[in-house]
Length: 175
Image (cartoon, rainbow, N blue to C red; front, side, top):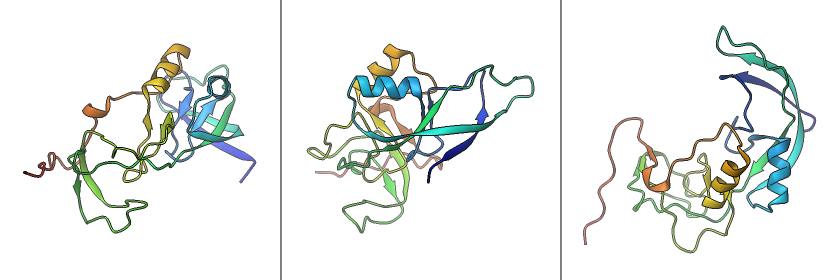
């Protein structure tokens, strides 16, 4: 609930344009928000002002930045896009019981493929089946690079791996 107040941790020299405190409600700089609106990208909503009450440097020799960007908190789209757990070579702990949310305990995933016809065109979104993961389009990647936005790392969908227990990819079904 507004007013939004946050405490930030500084891991580098400067605060970034995109701060993923959670995949559901990241913070974006006002500079980012203005460019997002100007270019009519889709997948973020809200844009509520945030008061930064503290910045804590995480490295001993790092000093606080001279200026703190103004931030807004946004909500990320949880649209219709659904991950294809078979083509993602996902290892899951239990079968999916709800086809709407696709909630399951994914233990490992090797690549990200969406089921055809499920994505509705958002430039940034959380897919069904992997709600804590943010996916972006090439359009978003180009937007971020063109504007020089910071604190983002892009991994091509076919190279995405999350396998903390080193289980390896699930075998593809034969046939």
